Image 1 (cartoon, rainbow, N blue to C red):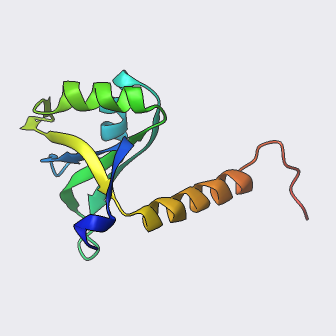
Image 2: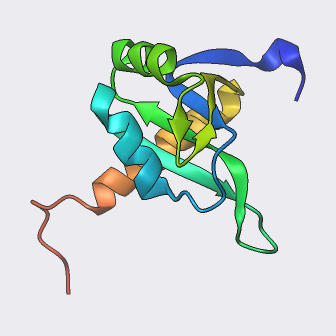
Length: 116
């Protein structure tokens, strides 16, 4: 992926320097103080299933993401100072994620009557 093909997200934050014991629920809890979190994810090593020390938090509203980035950059989470910045994203991956989210929401519609 070349730098020319990336865009800076308005709602998704990169969070680096995470404690290896921190899990996605902890990350969500820390950042939900600033607004509604759409998702939080700690990236795991595929072979060991252990944290790679970074993750992502996506907010519903860009204003909440901006507040969180400003407030949390350099702050400690589980005794480690974290680096928080707006994520750089590939436009193709953004569309694929939006399509997956739309499909998942469709599958989990609580008003839908299941077919037998």
